[in-house]
Image (cartoon, rainbow, N blue to C red):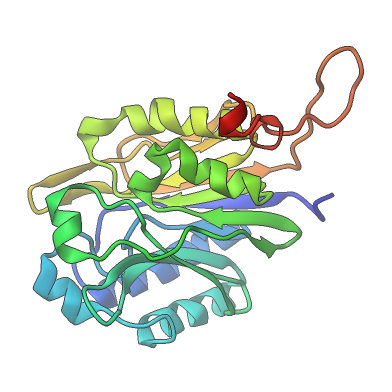
Length: 267
C-alpha cells in the first residue's frame, strides 16, 4: 500500500529561449507549485534548453547528469521542497540523448531515462536513441516510471513500466498542435489499459516554425481525464490517490491487464 497521496503539478510553458532564462522560469514555477501543495513538478520535454535547436546547438548544450544544469535544478528542488522532472540533452560519446531526470525534493537524482523512440528527422538528427528501456523507481511510497513524448504512443512502453509495478507514469513532452489525438485519446487509453496514472506535461507556444499544442493531461487508472489544460501556459495541479478496483460481485484488487494477459505464444 502506498504511503500517501501524491500531488503533481504539470507545468505547461513555452520554451524560454536560453538556459539562464529557463532556470529562472523553473525556479518560479517550482515556487508556485509548492505553494499549491504539489509534491512533484513535471516539466515539458527538453525544458532546460529548448528542443528544436539544431544538432550543433544541442551538442554544445549537452551535459552529463552530474553537470551544472542538473545541479542547478537540484538546488531549486531543495530551495522549494519539491521534486522536479525535467529534460535536457544528456552528453554521450556520440550525439546526445534526449533525456529526462527525476530529482527529489532533497536534490537527489533518483532516475534518468533517455528517449528510445525519436520522432521525425529533426529529433533523429539531434539525438541518439536511448540505449535502455525505462525503469521503475520509488518516491514517497509510489512506484514511478518516466517516458518522453513519442514513447507514450507505443503501447509497449507503458506496458513495460506496468509490468514492473508502476503506479504512475510521468511523460514530459513537446507534442505539436497537429497531433491532439495523443493527449485526448492515447494518454487516457494508455492509463486505462495498464491501470496506471499517466501525467503528460506538454509545451505550448512557438519555437521557430513549430507550434506546440498544450493540452497537458493527467489520466487516472480507469482512463478518466482528471485534468487537461488548454493551449496557454500555466500549472495544472492534481492529487493522485492510491488506485483500487473491483471486479465481479466481490470487492477486491483488480490487477492491470499487463499482469493477467497470456504470453504471446498462447494468444
